[in-house]
Image (cartoon, rainbow over all chains, first blue to last red; front, side, top):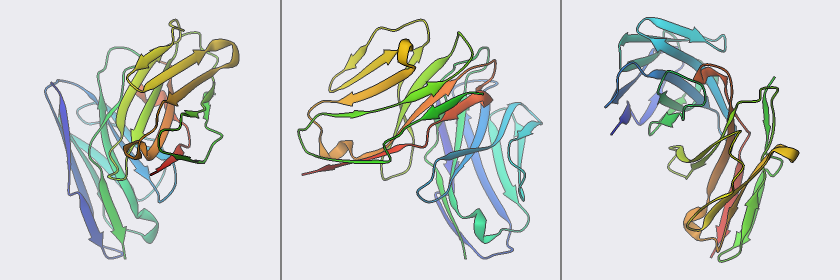
Length: 114
Length: 115
């Protein structure tokens, strides 16, 4: 069976500091990978998605970036965090091949920028 | 463009009551998929159900049931005999197109089940 893990689970970072959230998927090959953000009390916002190694598509312009150095590894980064970057970040994956595949989510990472 | 509406922002019920969460979607595609996810206080989104546009059969899973009606573009979710553990935010979602990036979530409905 497939599993997805992301870390760290909780992060408190000062404004202007860098960020690195990491996510790995096990039990499948060549998945689609996603980063979502959920601000407090708000809905889900797709930040990045990837259909393969080195292939990243950005949905929202911001000071965040994503990388996919390996097939099942997805990293969310920032060089300098802003207060507005605070929120709940969710990594997710789905099978490729056709539309309508279920997206499965990791445990999430709570980021507070102070 | 595709769109998902969950008009109920928050619902409160007393334990053992039945509750229905509404979901209305918009799409121009004839082939699409609908989903429900549960987000408990811990934060992780838990997949509950996936339904394709060609299958209008209602589904029941324990205390959960789903009513898909293409005529009204609705995919409603009913919890029978609600329990405190059902307290969560529930998201309806729609997928169309060739890749998962066309996966659109509704704004969510926060359900509170009171003891």
